[in-house]
Length: 429
Image (cartoon, rainbow, N blue to C red; front, side):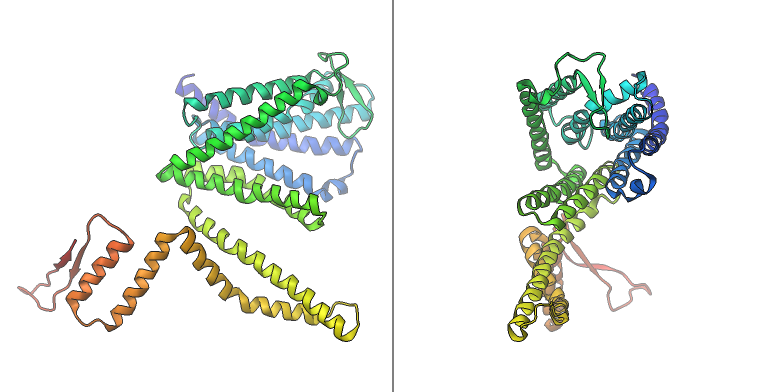
């Protein structure tokens, strides 16, 4: 395709992506309500569904912007495809539900809607879990040696989708016991997940995901300059939000703690929304270098929040135990909450400074050394009276902290020469 044709296609697609997503999402909710599966109040109360719609809407919006502004970059097309698949194919599934509930017999569109809704999920996962990390940020593979990862991931995805597409009876969403005969289905193929080949393809798919993650690690280690900052944005969202969601969800499943499950869901949704936004920031290079500040704040305030939470709950529990031992009452005293709150208020700034100093020493050594050098120079500045020695000190500090290729120090002379003040170099390195 010529560049002119590509720009034309990208321009048209860019203007259609968001309207198609909105149309598909609205159709999904309207058809679901019309089928009587849920009512209007239940849809509004379904925070999970609404937040997921917002999350995939971010994929559509950022994808549309990238398609228009960077049509040669595959990443924009991947984001747009993820958003559109969720909206349109979910609408197809809800149409099949509506038809089966209201008419009891499917038409051709209902068959197609149920069919695509039944098998598109792994295709979307492949785009998000294999090809997005494999091609980020420039839309190209890191090198040709990563081509087998893309090919094997594609083979696994197509194999799984094909098995799901050939089931004998297509399940209809939200209607237990209802099914639609698959016109291209294989008789007797009811649960493809039980087949050995499905397990093998799933293993190959997971290997593709692992290969894509390895590609991100290798690309990050090799990257420099702008690409390094782009990879930092991508890695930050993956590690902090999505990794945090998986961790809290796993702990919740083991311990049964309810608020951890809610935290896992919140982190999942925030990660879902943040991923396309982060990709857009990285590719458009908008405030690209602020990621270093964000990472620093996360490293500081993450442990700080965890420590203060432990202090708070530990203080409440300890005070409550002491209160029960002294009074014999079982109710929780308000004094426990007051004392714990006061302790947290007193610990916040000292603890933050200590954690910040540790993070700077461990992860930002150059910044930490530069600050220490400037503090030492400020102390000497108050006591130094020799101007030449002070000049040498200043030049040395600049060279040590900023590490420029060349340093020159200019001072204004105290006398006028020919009625004009002249600047002269006093030191140079």
